Image (spheres, rainbow, N blue to C red):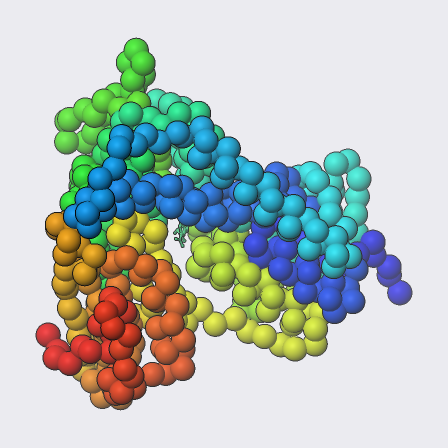
Length: 449
Ligand code: NDP
């Protein structure tokens, strides 16, 4: 019988790879994992976690402003970018340490370096060959760059966390998750923000009403949101950057952040040596068990073309380990995955948008309400929140829920459980609200639009 160095070798120590390693090791597999950068992957090192810490930092400004309406008098306040970065990075170091110790405790061998495939069951790492019965690819994705003259003057979400100072003015390119989130972060921290998006509205694929509502709210917070514009060039002009736009105008800023999507990180993996196929977007092709076109090679997380979300990668990694090492076949379901954009205000959804529902169901009922949140009453802020339910008129099943407003991300989690359980509108109606909250609107929506 052929023997291998490992039962499982994982390439990529992010959310999906780490979960798969630990669970497989728990089933008694001999597991090795290689990470080229830092354990924790995009989410922990340069994604969800540092982003959310910076979002918290940026929210104090509006809290200070709102506090006046509630009777507070504040002295001058200034933000110390370097202090925020130092505190944030200390927390990231701590989390990375936790990831390492979880792997150590699980008995997983951790390697530092960029691994590549080297034929069936063979991995090449730091000049050595390692053999494994099963290989899991969990290398994630990397930010897209702009293909325009002067692109070298721009930063992506990989570099934005390393800025030494807050820029006085920033241009953010894109209308997706990252662009909307960083527009809010920079704006809150006192930077003048212009957000440049090529499409006619932000967040393509989200519920249309949510998109329009959120765009209005983002603009209301002071972000100069410009739609239907492409960046044609970036030029360095003395200490500043000039951003040339397709409509003939030019923006003068101190930094340009590009957030135009993420590409699957397969380059250098040498997938061809093991017959692993990629699709037209360069994503590794997998079946519902995350198996690639080579039966001994699996892939989870952002390197596949499913949903690029941390909990999805974790779910896929766990299901892979259960299936291959735990003796339970677990196909992955990507239905009713909740998602949230940590913009300011936040937006969150689960299930179908109104447009998706109308394309799939004959009788779709829409319940919704847009209102001034209570906190704005005394702060005199002109903010409006949105809650919306999309319901199948025939079965009364709730197909989708959408929110724009404070704590939308926290609220959507509970709604996701309801949708996963197949809740009907009548179940929402029979549930009592928590008063006074934004969330209670979901159980008091009575009239259709
Ligand atoms: P998104 O796919 O969300 O958005 C990309 C944006 O860039 C879109 O507005 C797109 O416009 C625009 N775009 C694409 N190509 C170009 C181009 N060549 N020139 C100009 N604009 C372009 O990607 P992000 O980079 O924001 O985030 C990557 C992924 O990471 C997300 O899809 C999400 O899965 C995940 N993520 C999740 C977060 C969360 O859960 N809170 C936070 C951050 C990231 P168009 O619509 O016209 O295609």
